[in-house]
Length: 164
Image (cartoon, rainbow, N blue to C red; front, side):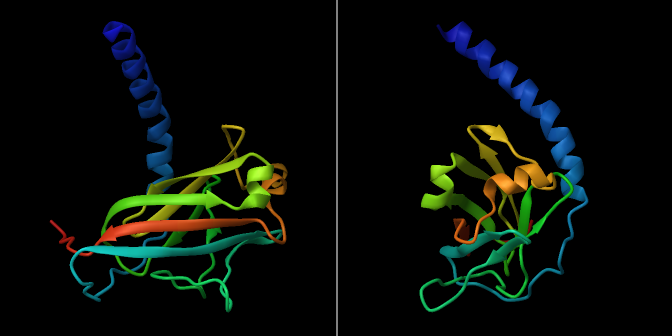
């Protein structure tokens, strides 16, 4: 049994490494804002908000009932050349966790998301039924967009982070 699991893990690692090279190349093309000079308190810092997937693109949804923390709500997320939704946090800190949870509209469509990075640049890969979507493709965007289609984005940073 251990040999089977080891072989499966090795196969997965090689496959992810091959895929990751393309993703890493696209990552280097991402815009990188200037580093922030704000010093956060030590310990966990919670960052996040509600991202709405409108027909003309993703936007932060902020009103009396929806709050955003650690992200500038005036700078909308963008879709990068790899089909990911991307945005930046206000601070660069070591990431402890990152989640993008679909609301009931997206759950009914079998849409999920996974986070990448999270220290400053955050990238979300959306999938339908486990199949990755390229959100630059209008047909894939049509699968996720909607007047009330939201992702609840939650990131936990470590405020004790110090650049090496």
